[in-house]
Length: 159
Image (cartoon, rainbow, N blue to C red):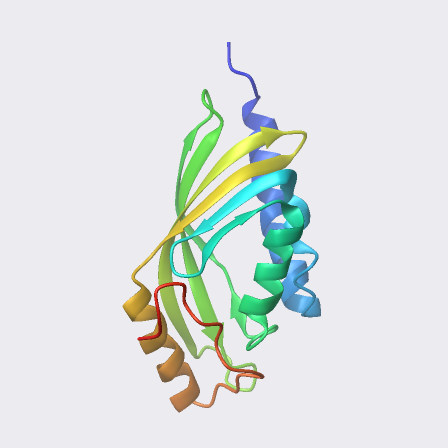
């Protein structure tokens, strides 16, 4: 018998999307980490591993500081394992230019989320090509994107 229901996991994913959108709309990246358990783990291979909701929040605030309103995260495909309580999905880290509707720059990311119960995720791991990250950022700036600060340094050094 599964530990969690399909509806529970689907609802948690909807909340994940809703809080990401609210953080983007408000520029307040302390909102989104409410999707994680208090002891949640966020593994971000370019920036490090963050343990606990507070550490995840601190990371996201720093990481999103250059573009608090200029990055959205549309989902592509999703593959669920409801029996075990996890999913893998394609996420576009999409840089936009609000003054240029329809102009965007995507860094494609694969994300695994492990469900922790009570509507919260206990683990997230993001996989993408870090060399492409800088290329996408530079294309966005060349097209008129305006970062508010410098990019957060990567754990393994700048490209």
